[in-house]
Amino acid sequence: DGRARPSPSMCDALVSRGILPSLVKCIRHRATENVSFDVARVLPSIGPVVQSTEAIVIVVGDSGTGQDRDWYERSDLHASVFALVQRLSSKEDCPWLAKAVYFVSPASHGSGDDLTSVVDAFTASYLGEKFDNAVRHLPPDLTFPMIRSMIVLKEVETEQLDRSDVRILPQGPQGLLPNLDLVFATYLSFQSYPAEKKWNRSNSIYYGNSEFRAHPFATVLEDRVTSALQPLLGDWVGQTQMTQYARDLAGMAGFVAALVLGPTQPHSSALRHGVDALTIQVGIPGDSSPMSIHPHYADFTRCLEHLIRSISNLHERL
Image (cartoon, one colour):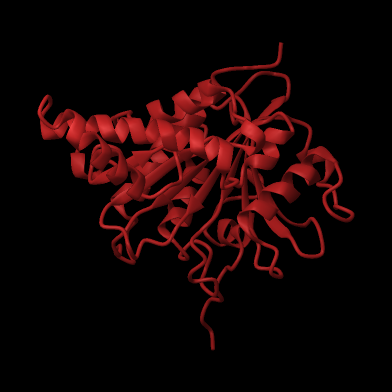
């Protein structure tokens, strides 16, 4: 009928929207019979004479809706990540990039393409190790840098949210944690300010109408801690102070509980292989205009670029 067909995969979306293969190499990789994914690689446009020997991996999930739509239009997270790929591949926008950056997105193939399976399969394919049955390795020209950091972006449903909810989750299996420098750098990146002089605070995912936590549990944990502290501290401190103290105490308890009890986060496979990794779970309610990205998603990837820049400035191989 003459209409453009949707681009269901990340690679198709990159090509159809004008990102040249000479700048960003992207392939579809079928790691196992049940798990496949797209891998896009951005190399430093201006860097050292020797090839980049270290890499950062960004795994991009989504909430599972709109699977029949174009990858770019499927969610605001995808659209903002696309803009980030554009910026990182430009020597004018990001001349500071010193490490290779890989973007991994699940493909619609079979029922095994949940985020944890994709991270497990990518890690095994990249490192050349066994995963369940036989795993198909990635091409050697894609796997020469050593993976130093992995950030998994997990988008969740927002029907029950009245504000943006971000969880920075470094917990791994059996008490494993990444280097805490990565955790602190992530928090500081979200607390950063944009370069614009005229800045709308409500557009900030950190300073706007949002909540940040370092555990996966619901607000019921904070409510119970507040109820327990009310008889003890209610006559000594104000309500605002007690609420903040209860939230901090619940955050500490939730962090430890997540280490001991789980649930297992998608980045766990990377931690088991010695790669510093964490999961950022994000839920941003509200419908955005078809012609624009939700401001919190736009600021989310601005913070992610800030984090990549922080990591890129540290060459870890001694």
